Length: 210
Image 1 (cartoon, rainbow, N blue to C red):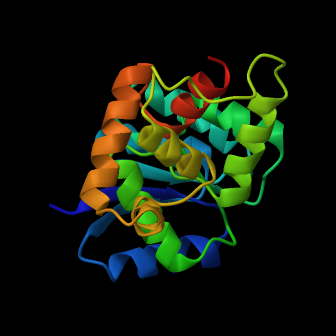
Image 2 (cartoon, rainbow, N blue to C red):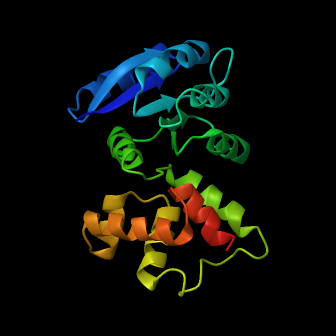
């Protein structure tokens, strides 16, 4: 069954270009697109998409507040930020509002497809420099410059978590560690279980603040 999407983006060429590109894949179906957060917050709850691709800088209400509004009606929807903003405040504000993925608009089209699939599978994909910003922020905490001790995560699980923190996709982790993508998913599932978290962002946060 295709992954259902909604797109919230005020620039016509970006919105339509993204819609047309994603519609080429049989793995996705674009239910609707919206130019403003106000339109999206009214229309999206009745669509029940799997994922909303959300810009931040919108006319009127911004994308972060739009996430908060939509989550009042449907907390099952996952949100992928798709924006030019990469400063720490915007990233953390979006994640706290309920976003699980964060991609910059200069992200390659193939990477966007892989990231949407990863998000749908329970991951928390981010552009590599955004993931590094999160790690750097966590490392600034005086007691949080190491991953959990080996008794919490196995050496292999620590390797996988390190690569997740660097922003690698599941298939890239598999290639680097010479294991299958299915094995990577098993490791990540166990990491989430052991750290009592539900996505990549929470796992990095928990690991560096253990």
